[in-house]
Length: 176
Image (cartoon, rainbow, N blue to C red; front, side):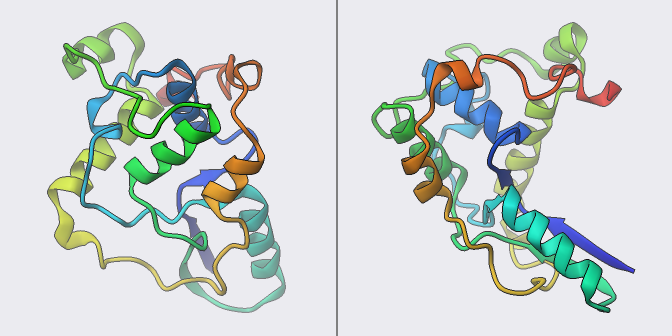
């Protein structure tokens, strides 16, 4: 069996980067830890076309194991937000978090455990456990061909493309 574990996916209709792009467009994010400076450098955003290529490659090769599928550049979540802010026509670091963050159980009560809450929690976990940074699966092959910041410099964020969620149950991912 071959298991491919893609890194943070970006491109058309990618859920978590779509959420971060919406934050960049409106200039605010409901989770302060997604817009703050941090130390965890393990994100290697991978374009959906590169994920599809890796999956196609896996179908033609007989390589058993667990492999990571990464993009060509390593970025912090802050560097990802900087790229999205530039693509939205904003200055780097202009997207802020909430002045009074809501308690997680309040968010869970009103909307359920959402994908964006899970991303925030995952990021916070890695920030607090930097010793886990080296624990990754071997890479599948060459890194993806599409760089995150180059793709967004060629595809500026337009509100009409990000006005709607990427899926019908965006705020209740646990019910999908």
